[in-house]
Length: 179
Length: 179
Image (tube, rainbow over all chains, first blue to last red; front, side, top):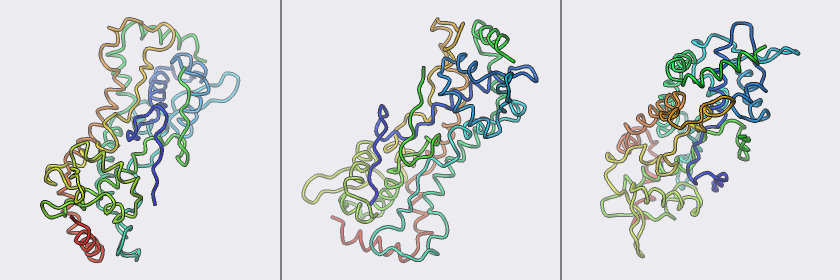
């Protein structure tokens, strides 16, 4: 029998589809790193301070981004993080997947096999349940939408939309903190 | 400072985007209810037994479906559940939203406002962050994909794809259990 998973503290019961809040942090950090001059890096500590986040919180997400090949960690006393490839070659999906994983949101537990009189032979279930197929296809629409947008799009958005004061504040900080 | 939300037991750290498993149960139950003759109902207990689920687990989701107006609860000693409207008028989004809520998956905590030198005036932030805008637009693609598919599509899938033994097992059970 499938029991009920308790909702996490502070989360509306049933609304279990919340994306890791690390995604927001990762996107913002990637955007800042896109503004670094070639060959320069920013430390995790600097990125955390720039975004008002705790070091330990952000470092975990930066590590995930590095593991996924979105950013690279340059080791050593003058080390830090930089993008692993050009902004145009990094999709929003790359960043989201690095933090949030690639597992589908839809949970299929093969309910179709359960209950009185159901067939037991595996061959009856060799293709996915059509419910699962449709749900995964809908998620693919979301995934494609993210895949079709890049960090370069965010850079262009930023140039166009970020308030001059904030733009200057970030530029100043990056100038002072880059290695 | 934003701290890290602990991953739920059994869930891969970072993969926090899992949809409530109640969605699968709700979709299967809605499909079974779509096969009821007019005026007939099935009890929550029957639906649970048919899907090999515990009563308490399923009843919560059936209540959510009823609250959302997808199914209706007929009270009384011969009471039970039936669809609230025709299968063609129930989208997959209606069912998913009833169980999983309508909150976006993307969590925006307005990181853009944090950090040294950032503007404090609210008017600077009167439009959404472009990162949030893009993320929500991607989710809308998913939502639209779900909205464009109905329970009637699942009925048609079922007629075409469900193994004859399973189709017969469900029909037999529904025949015996309907009120």
